[in-house]
Image (cartoon, rainbow, N blue to C red; front, side):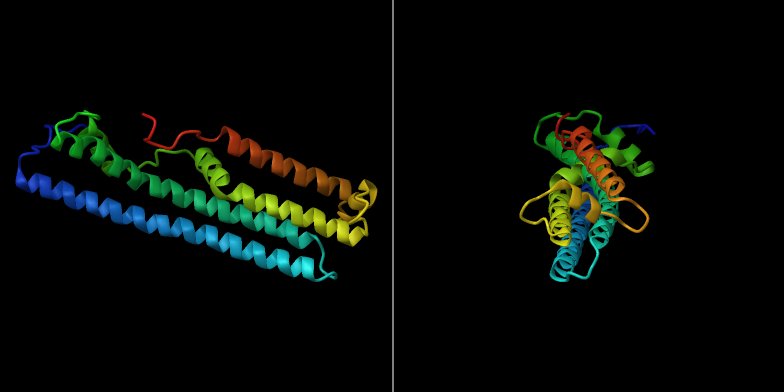
Amino acid sequence: MTPTKPPNLRDTNTVNSLIHLYRGELGRMALYRVRLDTTTNWAIVTNAGIVTFVLGNGALSHAALLFAMLLTLFFLTLEARRFRVYEVSHQRVRLFERGFFAEQLGATWVTDWPTRLLQSLEEPQPPISWASALGWRLRRNYLWLYAALVAAWVGKLAITSGEAVTGALQPLLAAARVGPLPGGAVWAAVGAFYVGLVLLALFGSQTYPLEAD
């Protein structure tokens, strides 16, 4: 939808309404910023607990660390979803800052900001795709978590196989067996999973939304 006429930025009611909307979007941004941090903290605490428990108990299978990798994927997906919702408010705030407030100060950085703001209010759409959101959160936090998990997993295999010192490959392959799945297949699955994570992090959005245009 296109505004039938540009907003009258000299009208007190119009200006007050826009300022209240701006404050509301700032509040939403702060709320989802906290939710993003909460999700990351839960992922860190959960992984730390699982790694400590598995490495401290020789009777536990390394499969618990594989489960931790999948659980971290759940946290990553949840955080990417929240990041996309966060970006809706972030987009509106940036439109205010680069449009409304810029005009109040005598500049015109974004001339079509009323149209873009109205479109965002009418049909809220995250300005960042799922792949980009996942890539952003991976690069920001989750690649470090996954690096710690795979290091703990390899360490657990080394301890289980008795090759913690020599590092021989064949015992490590055998120790990776999970039920009927041979160790080689488990190693291949973990390797493919990590390659996918790295590619997603590398080819996700490289610039922060609304900061490069």
